Image (cartoon, rainbow, N blue to C red):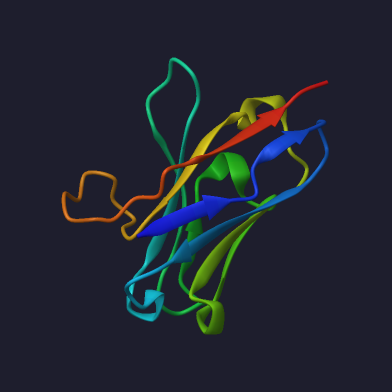
Length: 117
């Protein structure tokens, strides 16, 4: 099971740090993808962290602003989001895949991020 937390309301330019905590399995062996879905839009891939921290990829729109990291001791992956923009408003999900079409992935329940003036 994956559980996201850390979402909330923030003004443009602000920061939030999302957590994706795993229970029942060890995240050490999984790549973790972050995805988001804004109201009325399709789910979008945000970034993906491999088992090794040196293999992390981001969608162009968040490069330089978002950072994926993991704490294996806490069995948790993080998404640090800086310089947030209104267009970052969405429900954010983590999953044990970098490919949202993979049918065997575990997904979290999502956490709402709202960036407003």
